[in-house]
Amino acid sequence: MCRPTPVDRIFTRLGASDRIMSRESTFYVELSETAAILQHATRHSLVLLDELGRGTATYDGTAIACAVVKELAEKIKCRTLFSTHYHSLVEEFASNPNIGLGHMVSNWDHVFGGACFQKFWLPVRNLCTSYPAIIATTFNMLINNIESGFNHK
Image 1 (tube, helix red, strand yellow):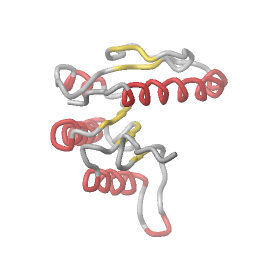
Image 2 (cartoon, rainbow, N blue to C red):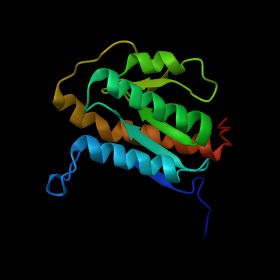
Image 3 (cartoon, rainbow, N blue to C red):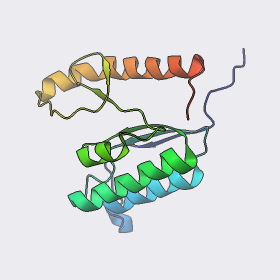
Image 4 (cartoon, one colour):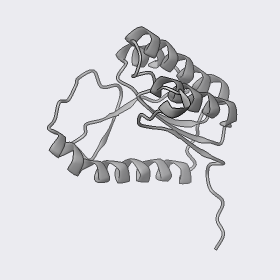
């Protein structure tokens, strides 16, 4: 059976990598990949961005992340999962009608509504055993929202 997908493309910017032999730093690679996402994503794309701007100074990272979120939410208007540790970024977009805030506690199998203003420091051992359940739960929630007519503004 052939079934159309709810998205036209999936873009990811996760983790850190460099191309030192090509004289491309981790920061350069991160910005290059992010630029490609912003150039090619459409309203029907799914974008996954994790800790954008973390490899640079706090104010520079916040400015980069803020600009990218603004572009994705207000111009491209695609489905996006954007994780950040910049609380000022969360505050900046809390009232944006195109953005829904949520947070996860790494050792719980649940996604909570609203921003998280508490840091959870857990042993690495606990994180390693929790990820598969968290990923599955988040993925299923996303798919259920899409299939039930998720109305992305």
